[in-house]
Image (cartoon, rainbow, N blue to C red; front, side, top):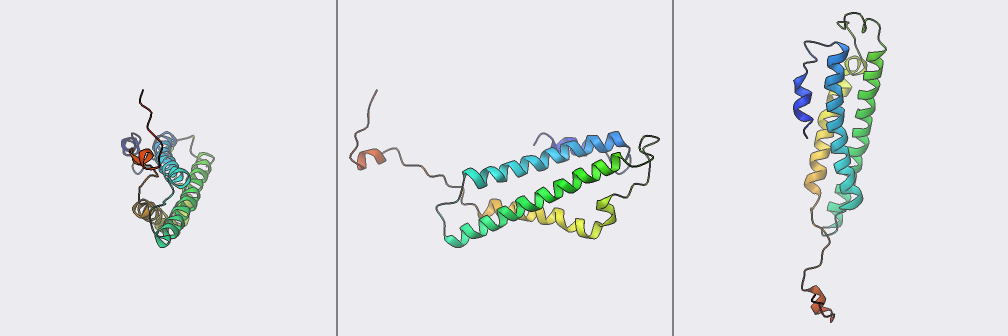
Amino acid sequence: MNLLWMVGLFDVVTYHNFGTVLAHTLPYVGIQVAFLSFIGFTLLCLRPTDCGKCQQVSWYITTVGYLLLQLFLLGVVIYTFIDYSQSPNVSETGENHYRGIMNRHSQFFSILEPASLAFRWFSLMLHPLKLDTKPTGESEKEGKPEVEV
């Protein structure tokens, strides 16, 4: 999350030369990869067990939906950055009027980012955040004596 302040440090609206866009894009992609890794970790290691089937199914649907949508968005950002770097006039002044894939299809892509945030929020809210652990006195109830060192 230390990358969050770096995204706002470089103003790509006013100065959209290649260096500024690169300095803005790399922390943004780092934040998105961090969220993707966190949700992937919960999917692989912290599966919900102490909840109903409806909540489990809802959690799996929102989590997988978020992962697929986030991978698609990261692919679009990386594709746009590669397309921008190969655009003419980038090396001259950097002030070209580049209209990338996100600008060309802005009505479609303007919905995807909020949808990704909603899927991430629902995934975290639906997870019961309980771990499978036994209480410390559980071994005495099963007839196994505790070993003192």
